[in-house]
Length: 254
Ligand code: ADP
Image (cartoon, rainbow, N blue to C red; front, side, top):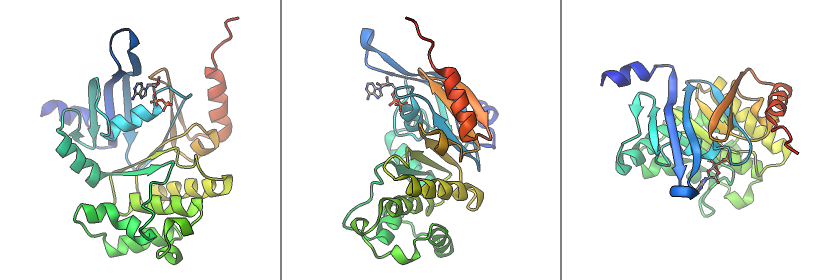
């Protein structure tokens, strides 16, 4: 399709054009995303920030094909995912996207190793042994592989969840507040791990966060407000992110 060739630049791991998502109908409609244009650069770490209710999770879900859109288009790599049937979408997510959630989402009865390979097993694929070793060693999980989640700390559990996302070599990893349930040390560990997934394992990471310190690990920050991209920041530091957030603070009306 000629339009696809033009719009889906090779550098974008994902992109959205005029992405609109409304919840509800009539007077109770909530416009969670209002004609959003974004490009997620391949091989880079992008943080998505914004106040609660600004549309961060909705954007992530729409980019990942976890939610339908009301209008607009979304591409994963060069594949337009808007309009795909649920079955195709499920396969595409399984093969090309990795997820890390705030709540780890590990299965308690499986060992760390079994949790890591579960999505690939379900897909009937086998992890590449060299890549598996590389991921497990990079994430420092070698001596934890036989443990069950209850025998691991929060930080270790999140590392297992990161390994699970990485081991299938997805085109894109989405992390939704991955440090939200971790103490600051374990959080820092997971952030530097996502950083090394980009730097050492050449992955693309999109992380939703409301923590400027977390966003400072990214290469670029997208700021959302009321369902729109309000700003972008390259090479962020915690200070520059704070500064930018302060400048968005709504002026007092009283
Ligand atoms: P954030 O992740 O930035 O907190 P969300 O993407 O969760 O924001 O939500 C954006 C807006 O959409 C909010 O106003 C929220 O209340 C609304 N919203 C999100 N999910 C639903 C839903 N399933 N039904 C109705 N409204 C929703």
